[in-house]
Length: 187
Image 1: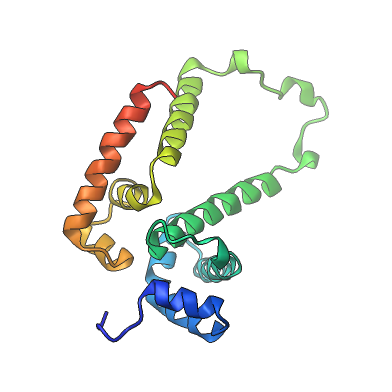
Image 2: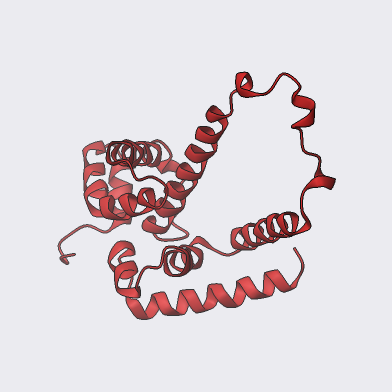
């Protein structure tokens, strides 16, 4: 990014003041980040493009909710990730048609007692991890997820979030430390 380029904060301030056409700068700046997020959830090229467009639209509509407590890229990453998770939940829900249930569906209903303990333990652990991640600031959580869940290098994260590698390493270290503390507290 050249030094003459306006910062994300400057662009957002100007968009809020009525220069709506500047939103395209944010879209150009973060297109690869949003496509990376979508690629983690969807493989179909047309759906990826549509979902990325939906994420940018949602971000534009919710731009007033961006408080600036974290980088815009972190906020956008989290918004995109949540959009993709919601999309997958809706897709799974749509795929479960009641007409596909057998006539005697009472035998198909699974109560918690019949679920293997390992599956319950995994669901509980996953829920605890999600709650712990929610307690950590987006500033630290996003790079942590990009590094360990998405398998990205610090250099790639640095490019996507426009944050120096050294700062990212500090944020990831801080996130891991906080995550460990929250998990040890038995959320």
